[in-house]
Amino acid sequence: MNMKNIPLSEIYMDDDQINAVIDVLKSGWFILGERVREFEEKFSKEIGSKYSVSVSSGTSALFLSLLASGIKEGDEVIVPSFSFIATATPIIHVGAKPVFTDIKKTSYNIDPNEIESKITSRTKAIMPVHLYGNPAKMDEIKDIAAANNLLIIEDACQAHGALYDGKKIGSIGDIGCFSFYPSKIMTVCGDGGMVVTDNEEFAEKIRLLRDHGRKDKYLHEAIGYNMRSNEIQAALGIRQLEKLSPWISTRRKIALKYNELLNGHVITPVEYENALHVYYMYVIRTNKRDALQKHLKESNISTGIHYPIPIHKQPAIIDHMGDIGKLKNTEECAKTVLSLPMHPKLSNDDIEYICEKIVSFF
Ligand SMILES: Cc1ncc(COP(=O)(O)O)c(C=O)c1O
Image (cartoon, rainbow, N blue to C red; front, side):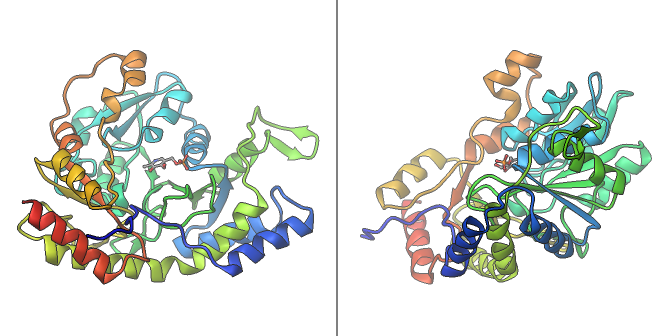
């Protein structure tokens, strides 16, 4: 029996990051300074977008992107329900309606075939989520958006460094939104987010809105918010970004090993040929999910369920917009998905131990 606990995810920390934080503390400059600018520049380079605007969280990134796009009361945004609730709540906060759309069971991402029937004269945008780090079908989504004059706001909060048709996720739609929450592939060791875009007007609006609508110290051109990022988070983000690429390679190697050992026992993740899945989460599917999770917990293996209740079934959402009825694949996946431990420090022995426990369970 393995006595040590195998965590679901783990943050990488080293002296370089700790010293970078100490440097900020000694500098006496904490908000929107040179480190934030450097982080934005380096993130733009990584994603291949003209502009990056760093903000206080992934939720702020989505909210400010919707505001900058002019999405408002009476508008509709097409979005999957199989995601974290923060995909949908910013849509409600700008006064618009999230139009929940079913997913494909193979990718867990929004099903492009379901999108067209949801489009009305009020639809303004599609918000695909690249769930677990697996890119949504961006070519089909782009065609639908172009044919219907819709914006694409990518919820890339789980997909740093993922690729679709050779382009980085986040740079394919009109705007891409990232989260640096501690569990993510790269983090700022606290809350943080980034908006990326090639549209100068959107970038300028988001810069204004994140900092009290401020054009100059005491000149306010818009009714803004305080959704700024800070120097400590940026100093950490710069260093984590340097490691993103090797971390993705390690995550993909771990996923391959899991696939090899679990094939035939549970449903393992599917990758598209033209996409690079970055495995923020390694997610399996089985009808015996709850019993398997309990069994793994007894063996000191931490797992997660992302997500047990689809957004359209959350009490807050039903309270706000009523019950929209059934989304078949979404509801089936909510009952059957299980996230296994996934982080670069996972050893071969850990993976073999986890898989041995899963195989013996069945
Ligand atoms: C898909 C998705 N969207 C939005 C968010 C919100 O990001 P944050 O927690 O940084 O506000 C998250 C992260 O938790 C997420 O996973």
